Amino acid sequence: MDRARNTWGAKLRRTLTCGLPVSRSRRGACRSCGLCCELPNACPFLRFRPDGRSFCAIYRWRPLNCRKYPRTAAEHITRPECGFSFPD
Ligand code: SF4
Image (tube, rainbow, N blue to C red):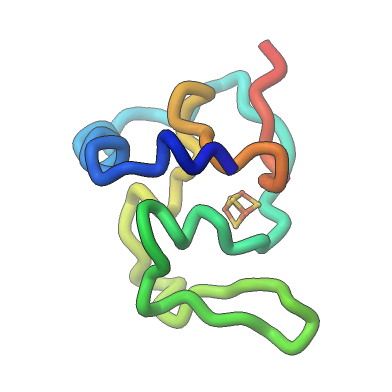
């Protein structure tokens, strides 16, 4: 993860733009690594299964910016661990 870009400013930008569509160039799927639940710090609803995979304690009601992360290549700071990519 790019920890230098993991700031409250980046979180604010993601929140303000979360109503916009997910980039059509996004590929892949979530690996349940849980890193995006630590942007910019660990979410109180972040949980881990015995095998190490993460899950959300309020998954059905999670905010839009969580549902859409990573919405664009520019906001994708959890590489290379994240299962999503933006090849274009
Ligand atoms: S960083 Fe990517 S792979 Fe990890 S939990 Fe978030 S969306 Fe899933």
